[in-house]
Length: 332
Image 1 (cartoon, rainbow, N blue to C red):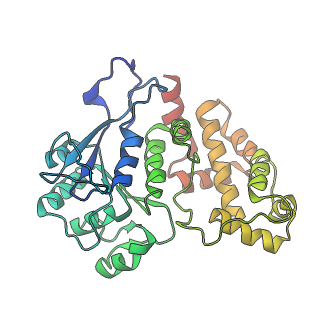
Image 2: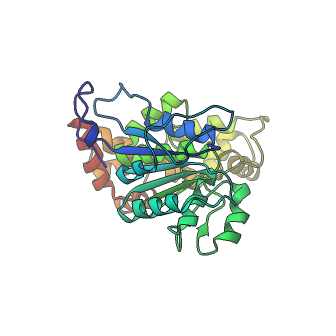
């Protein structure tokens, strides 16, 4: 839901996108904090109203992990007024949600409300039956349990988050930050999401397709670090870049480079380059009036059609539609 810019001192609360964060006894503290940091923190750096964020308590007394109590804005009835609902973890994979909560989640989904889960929060949606024949993810240690309990849902075990049918499910706790930034990017564009990421001291974009965990950390060895190679590639996205070019920049053999690159990024070099080119194109679409064919060329795509296919594949929308939505918003 895209809002029209208004004076920050005079927001129209009823018109703002309403994010409701679920709170429950045994609340996962870190996941809860992620949701509030992303959507409840004031954003004076923006000249348009930010989200309206409320906390919905589903239990009479809420004691979070760490032993402190949580004050809420209202009860489960808040879910009826939400544009986005966030479920920050859950009590456990075997903890069946109360039927009242299940019913509220089902009604919210039926009316088109977006629902975001962090880590084990996906089990609430599965118990509510709204993930049937869909796709989702969760923390890798819950994957086998989820598959055994909910065989009618495709659980993706090696990604940070999945966005499917207005349901965004994320993996372990920190992946919840990536999922929240994805939501902000979907609502407000890459520039706004990148500004929020900088305030969080987070990478501006870790795509949902990135691996949940990295089995081996990058070790410094003779030659340039992978980070230096990534910086070089970002500075030369307009040029054709082959795997051999990246390996030469690293000072490593191609075989060693490929292994270290995947260990360090969770992606192959070609997939990483494709996503970086799309990230660059999103910025150009938002901030310039360049023709699509010029943006495609500046981002290293061999043709406009190749650019359009890659952009839609990664963002879910054509580049022209993306520009119409977000560039108009920035200049309004």
